[in-house]
Image 1 (tube, rainbow, N blue to C red):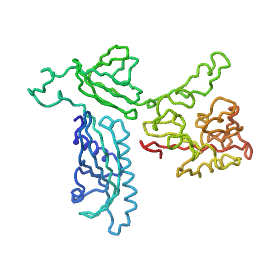
Image 2: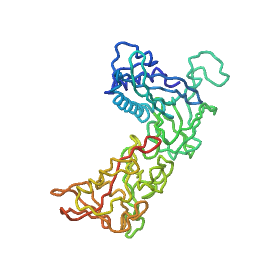
Image 3: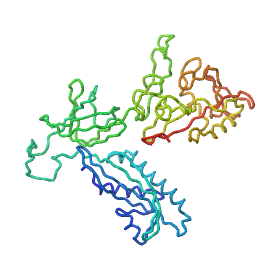
Image 4: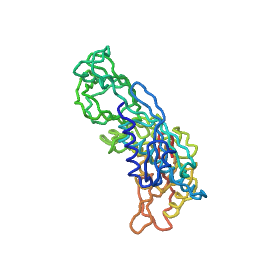
Length: 427
């Protein structure tokens, strides 16, 4: 097994030591932990219950409990439940999203529940249960055994260098260890130099895979083999998870002058509305509703070109502002956005210039396309401010920005919200 429970215990304890709302740590049964004296609450208690072995992974059921001491009259119960739920969420985010933990394994699924009991101290809190998949690339060469006949070709001096043959994806060039690959789901075989398969596995596109490999040979689609030395990391990340993305295509597809953007169509993604890889819902649509389709029954548009896979944040827009009158000042436009709640989602705000311009196509009516479908000339408020003015307005029919006069230059609000993809749903 590549990572032991003892290593996981050390990692969980370090999270507790760095967390400002977790004051002590125990590895074992919470019933035993609360009998210790003294305890500096809140207490983080961790253990694992059971697990399973697969060909290339080992799965543990990991339990993390965060408890605080309950007053005799339970007057602090609501505070305890609120604080421990947030702390449990913090633990989940670290384990599920941090690169450090992705080198250990990945979260398969997770649930939580609250508890309250009286054994020793009377405590209450929340329990997080995670099915955690450990990366397990160990083979017979890694066993602490000498002289055992495995009845297979294992040289006495050690195992041969590994060779990676990708059976569902071809590389156009040699891939250096430590480089970032943009991959769809891949299936791989690792064989020894005699052609015998040692390991077979599959990695999902939504998983960051970091493996420290022995010396390996990458064979590309042209049959060219390149060897990379051992001890380096091969990091595989899904499309879009790179730092410093190029800007989007403008949406111009007709060329009027040689060399113009209609001819060159510079920028990332396939086109203005099509991604060059799958969004978390498994399709290439740049714009979706909150369930991954394109019906927009709640008038919310998610723009996956803004997706930050590192923290799960993505921008969402409101397609047809429910309050139709024009707003004569930035202040009342902003107030309308701030007060907006759609389908349970609050925390909307007035968009800034870049957020609005990002969804404008280069055309006569820049927002006259699905899913926005503004067919008439409109002036929209932005949250950027100019000297001696409350804000600025943007006119997308001719891409002009105007300095508003107080009481004039009325525009429409254009609400935006930062959503978060937690691996299952948008929140």
